[in-house]
Amino acid sequence: MACIVSIQRVTLVLSLLAMLPACQSGEKVLPMNQVGPLVNGEIRIGMRRAAVVDKLGTPHRIETAGNIEFLFYNAPWQMSWGATGTIPIAIADGKVVGLGSSFYSEHRNP
Image (tube, rainbow, N blue to C red; front, top):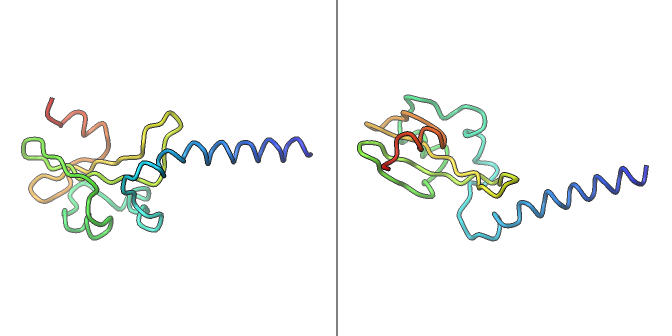
């Protein structure tokens, strides 16, 4: 029993240490109470830009590629391999036209 508890503690400590670089980076991140729309599907194709900003707040970064504006939000988590949880939301003509890093990779300027 003591071995199981010890393994659980080590796992917890390692998990917390894995998130530490994201906490120390100084980059702005969404507060936990604001991240809900990103994980529960509230941000949808066709949604107006103003509604996205109402739900998530001011974007942490904005990029433009042609007629597409990408709003970037830094989620409060970090992947195990060190990639941060940055979520791009693509806007064209004032509405969401795509979400996520694969859409961003396909549509950003080369």
